[in-house]
Image (cartoon, rainbow, N blue to C red; front, side, top):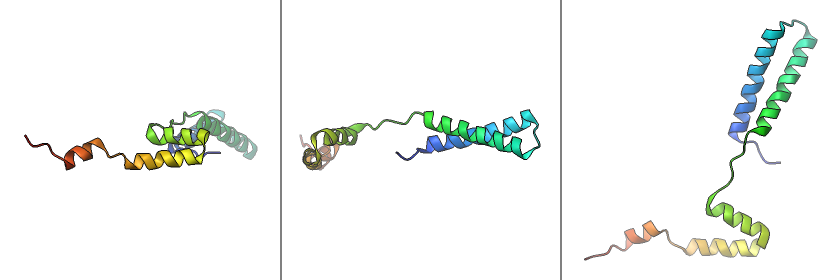
Length: 101
């Protein structure tokens, strides 16, 4: 199971806190059983919210290389990584070799 993102933790925690306070105030319960039921419901709601927060998708060369490595095998991804390491950044190459007119 993947680790939860910061957004998932934040939304889930905020949901638990806000929903617990709201349900306790609205129900006006004072028994231990009522507080326990409300707390369990708030935890379930927070878990539901945390799991439904959209997870950002990976982009860029790293994600494409990871997908290629998963389908073609580790040797192909290692060759692709070695080839990417040899390709210079275009901005760096032009800065190192100025054109004189």
